[in-house]
Image 1: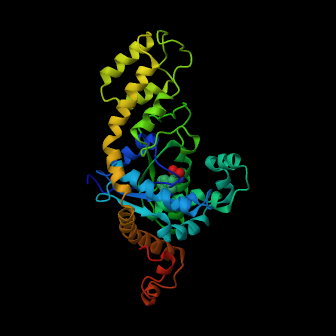
Image 2 (image 1 turned 30 degrees about the horizontal axis):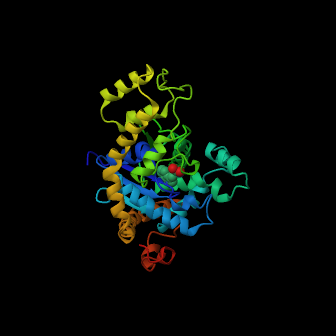
Image 3 (image 1 turned 90 degrees about the vertical axis):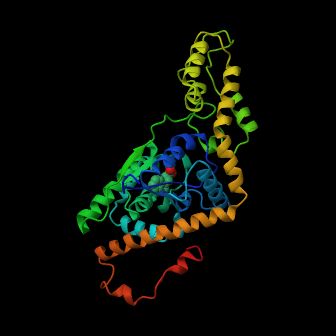
Length: 350
Ligand code: TRP
């Protein structure tokens, strides 16, 4: 390991991972594993902030997401997989940090304001404190760096504020974590909006080559082009954003762009070529995923092992925090407690 800096990042298990996740986050994570100690969090508690009514869906999505992560190169030999809900210290630290955070500060978080508008319902307390729980996720492992998309920057800013405030009052415990932003441009969805599981515009890692080809053949392209001989536009044309990512032959891509701009190649030919490139790129990942998903018990075992390792870090931080906040009567108090006093909260998981 090049240095001992630590990373924590995660996803909510909301559904299958798509090409946007692969290009924007998963490949970055896989590379970071070689240079950092990495914790990858399955943020299932965060799913509850908007979708607490479907327990079976969360479980199935968690297994599917783990298969996607591992197939994309997340390596449990190098990194630690953590199931958030199985480490009660996340909720405990979140409660303590919520004492240092004002309601008005949380009401100004842009993701919260957007969600409240989009959901058109009365926001729960849990939704309001979403960023405090995320701060707890990061600070519990004293992570220095957090690879995230731009949309998550306000949450990271809040995390730094809370860490700073805690350190000021109680002494230096937490690093103020910095983001690592993805270098690759966002992949648009098949109709050129942001790629999103719920928009019906995503190519999923678990899709078959045939499904992938169908989706790519139906993709949005230059709307001003009626005939293949019309000059085409490559700006704001997702076909070429994709080709830049998925065709490893840069010279061929430049040549295709020139021919497209001068009306010498049709959209269907570009799409067919693109589908072939995407399927070729995904073939090893899909083979691995298909194999992993037949052994869900092994996936559970991997995340269980990671979680029980992670919990040692989490306990250590929480104990330090409690001591500094005056929440134990003396350092010897803990010695008289039965060991693992809160295992009942965790059940048989770790
Ligand atoms: N809020 C993040 C998302 O929706 C998921 C998340 C939860 C997370 N806890 C985190 C990301 C901690 C980074 C660090 O994508």
